[in-house]
Amino acid sequence: MKKLVLAAALSVAASTAFAGNLSEPVIEAPVVVEETNASSSSAAIWVPLVLLAIVAAVVIAD
Image (tube, rainbow, N blue to C red; front, side, top):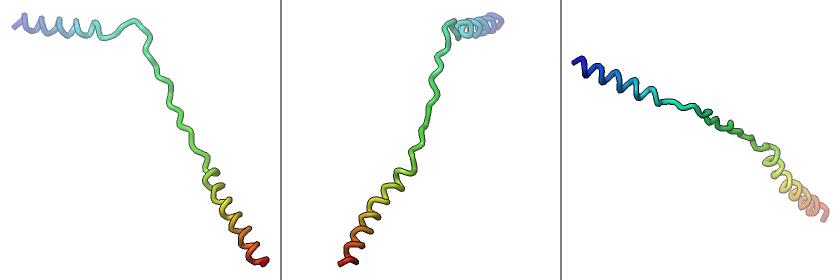
């Protein structure tokens, strides 16, 4: 029984002894999330509205 406990203790000590190394840890760059500009989608609605206003002005002028 003593040999089993000694073997278990040595195996745990041996496995943790090689767990780390001396090299520098690799640190990944932070992820940057850029929000899209909300004005581009609202600006897209102005073009058809301006064209509709021009067509309405032409129809009213006739």
